[in-house]
Image: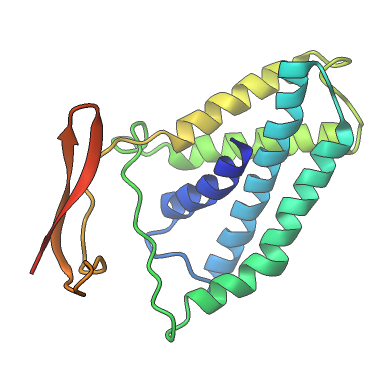
Amino acid sequence: MANFIAAYLPYRLWHLFSDEAPNLHSRRNILLYLVICLVSAFTVAWFLAFGLYSFFGLWIEEIYTYVFFNNFGFSVIFGMPLLIILTSDSVSIRCQKPSRHIIFGKINIKKPVCAVYALLMITVFILVFFFHMNPHDAPWLHILSVLSLSGLLCRIRTVSGAIQCDGGYRNASGERAAACSWVNAGDSRYLRMRYR
């Protein structure tokens, strides 16, 4: 679950704060990338450490700090150069935009909710890393965890909808998709594409 969050959360946050495809071609995008990596590293570290404590009653502070520095370090050291290469003009990889948010689709509260969530994650990090607090000695960390979890769920929840095709999908013959839509078939859904 934490690996899914580590991959999906940055993707979701990028499209929440930027209308561009992910790239590092400007200072604003580099700063956005670094902030997203930081929040994602906080989230995965919190998810693993507090998950271990919640389910098994086992608090290991080192897991929290190692996971945080590992995720943030790898995202910056390896992720930035890789994203620069993958978004260069010679490589044509495009990222599909996600469907709209349930809560954020109609009202504009995405920035305050994300700011509060980031503040909660920073607070937990400071309490654990600098003050060496744990949920056993400071039960109010559970309240911060519940608030953080609700913020996380609020940010990643989506509505299923139609996917916009821009000719990027190809079939085995190399034909480009002209249109695509979701089709319900019993209990499952699949993507139907029409080709030119």
